Length: 416
Image (cartoon, rainbow, N blue to C red; front, top):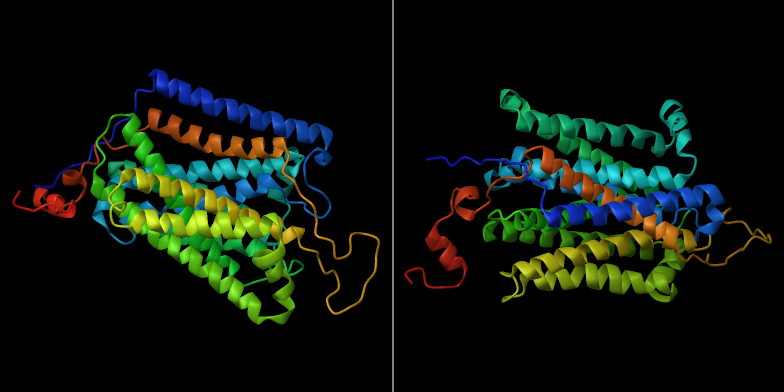
């Protein structure tokens, strides 16, 4: 007999829930205060300069925007690739995708200065600029995923759910392509100008978004006392491991491609060998913490069946992802810009000098405020609408689950 998944809102009156919302609210307030402080005093109070114009808030913003696309992974696997175990996870997947995008865009709007001028950016378009296209991609993503959720949650509209899921899947690929193309189209920066940026951002989104989804799912089910089976956790963990390996592969392909081009040797030496903090963030943050250690946690016998190891691995993937985006955005701007390639030009404006940048406290608080806004929106939404299943126990989610299979998976004799 087919088992039915029931969804239920959370009560949201417990002291831990109120404390969580209060904690997130503090960071949101600090982020808003930081945005006002920077807007009132000017960006000279930040670590940014004429050379580094995209600072730490942009790192958080781009990370959240990219992760928003990846958070929709789970819903896409269910509706596009028809994998039944992922279907009960789809509502939270769509919700998290919208929340992360809202958090990222909020940072972006508040960091750019003069947020009141946003209406100009939304009514005056230069379609030669990828930024103009991104306005359509971001707003379109939110509308499509909202409709997708509606079709998913309203029984009368369920027949349109697969079509909406396919459209959302295609749109999310276009969104991440657009975000990666911001950097891929910037020919003036040595670290950016590469066609591999767009596909690399797509696979980064798969990894970052799924890591956040796994942690939010474990926290939401655990803190509300709802069953969450090992099979779904380890299935997501194994998928995350594949994405982490793919991110490492694309990073390798990016740097090998640059090393093949003689004109790119300078930026490669800067990132890989003598770039100071950017070199350390690349090797220690991106490659080691965000890549190899999570893979060891996910696949080493003895750890591969540990929920704690899966959660720790997901946290490290997020930290490594932030390091990767920091190296791309800040490191790419810090490397000296060549204004007229092939020409000898002299000026008094820091020719050939690596730009100095140190994140200021208001920048960090604005970025963290956006992250907390996304999490608070998710926590509030599962309180007012049934996004969260009552149970994700193995025998309910996996149609092929049997007690014997579980026992065997745990490495114990099936007949015991």
